[in-house]
Amino acid sequence: MRLVKKIPHDRYLIEIHEYNSKYILNITLDAYEQIYKIPIQEISSLERIEDLINEEFLSKNLKRFVEMRQDWTKLNQK
Image (cartoon, rainbow, N blue to C red; front, side):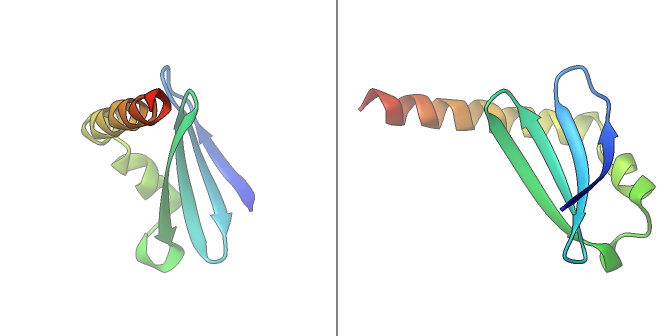
């Protein structure tokens, strides 16, 4: 897997990798990670992926990260 681009952000580690004819978008917050596999032929350019990573998208990601942490915390309490 080849790192293609790191996208600077104050809260998240955002990286785009290329592997097996796909762009792999990794969004990391603390110990949690969300991964999107995007076939290269479905996207016009790498810049298009960057354009799609807007505040609305990242806000939804944050909600998922919170849910992931809550799920893990509940599992750990059992």
